[in-house]
Length: 393
Image 1 (cartoon, one colour):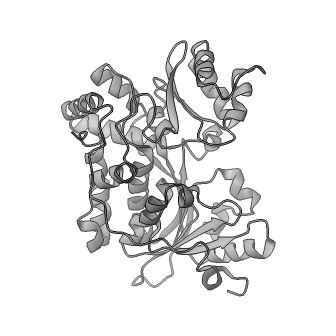
Image 2 (cartoon, helix red, strand yellow):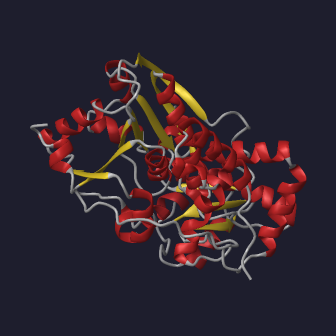
């Protein structure tokens, strides 16, 4: 027996429908949000999670006064645990010992310290966000001077799921997509989940550059300057270190819409907080809502903030391009989930509660199977570099 549909899919369907109507693209007319929220789980054979995320990349722990989500998916995350607990005797490979240390600590202190260290960590009952729109227009740019009859060129600097999904949906809407990867740090999804990588990145040109090489960085800047839409999901200092400033580009390139996808925000301290799909869902209050509805704690969906954000950001990007008003827009993943949750509570609170209870009752069952959309292999790593980003371009 398969699990019920992933909660909040109806809200995402409305966002997807907006993009489909704006673009009038045939490829979007038959696509639905449950497919986008569940297709990675279907490909991977995931089961409905309880306290360990479907991908096993994040877990819920009991702190002294709350529960918290902590991701230890990157090789460097465990190296930060002694600093997180402010002690040198931490066995960073012993999950039981880590759980015991968390149980002795207050959640707020761990979250504050963990975020400063660069860990993806969130408390279940922190109620970090209200129901306001999850996107913010950070900077006004120049009006477009381009031919309004041609499709947009999109330069996708993002990796993993939310940003690439945003680009994928824009490609389905008719845009020209150019995916840029670092020679030294390619998109981890390329090798880690090749089928899903191809699903999200099919049809995109592949440009690979060495960001330590001045000439190749200049080629990247020229490529960005040719774009109508840029998608990125880097912390601000990462781009600044490369000499790439979004505000400068939108000040100089007529009509450029720059979409910054972040974990928790694009300004202040939150701009530097790491966030992935599962912990951002927790930060938005979704696990707390699950507990309120069902009495049980757990994760909802598969890294749910990623696909929700990809869908929301794609509609935002297309609307921004259509408006012909350049600018930089920031989309925070945890805010996207909070906004979707607030919308579901406002429009159909009983249905939301029933969906959450059904989800909780399905723990351990396979995710509801979505149709596997037909897809072609993604472009070979760097196949199109000479065409789009050689120093001579």
